[in-house]
Amino acid sequence: MSRTTPSRRSVNRALSALALLALTAGAATACGESKADSGSTGKHAASPAATSSASPAIGAAAGAKLHMIDNGGHRLAFHVTRGNGSTIVLDSGGGEDSSYWNDLVPKLHASTGATVVTYDRAGLGKSDVVPGPWKVESAVSDLESGLQELGVTKNVTLVSHSQAGEIATYFAKENEKMLSGAVLVDANLPPLFTDEQITRLVAFSRPQVDAAKKDPDNPQNRQLISTAESFVSTNKAFHKAAWPNSVPATVIVSEKTPFDGSPEDAQRWRDAAAAFVHDGPQRTLVTAKGSSHDVPKDRPDLVLKEIESAVAAQH
Image 1 (cartoon, rainbow, N blue to C red):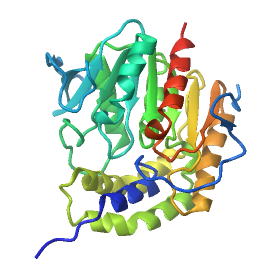
Image 2 (spheres, rainbow, N blue to C red):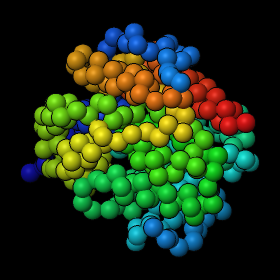
Image 3 (cartoon, rainbow, N blue to C red):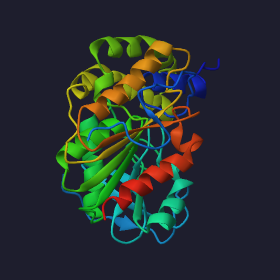
Image 4 (cartoon, rainbow, N blue to C red):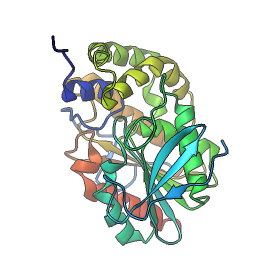
């Protein structure tokens, strides 16, 4: 008797409902709060030494070298394209590994001359699985340990998509001096996660989570299940988190948002981005016109432009 497993699209929709995964496009109306394509609405653990490969890992961007880094007993894959001066760190959305950025890495390296770092979060790509509920604190520790082992300590532009917005928020709070700026690409932001919205997201995603439990070894299913297990407590806390005023942030919000067929949730997503920008200095809001939640794939030109601008602002 064969098992019934959820389709990739249904899993992705559930992850999007949890504001995690950047693969599902939702139809929505553009928000009048944000500016189209460019311009501002904004106010102003110890680990062993890393090992590296002599050639790029499978799935890594051309020219990148693989560094396997240990943090607390599990290994994480960091892919590094060496440059000079500043560093750009690209962090993928839920369910995506470092290969998500492969098309963008060589373009960023060529246009900025910076070192470009991508990595696989625990349980994805070449990184080890860590059992149990997803913990943002562990994800932050993994990123901190990796950058420490790579000798990255300053002039970092952090680029975070979707779920990685949660990691970015806590990472920025703990590493203000390391960061020169951030580009938050249709990212999870604290204003979204009110108690009411958390309840809506949990209810929407429950059928897909139940289906994913029938095939828990699939990496995407595992990501969905582990995230769902800690979703309520994680995002109640995240709602209270504050982005440090000393770190400039460009917020790119997609026109269509992650929410397919739910205008109310789509509007809340856009409103959360506008509120985040309004709540602090040195923040800019940009709308990716015509884009789904998958902005780096739908509008790579815009993402490249905003990262280049953030890096240039360091000088």
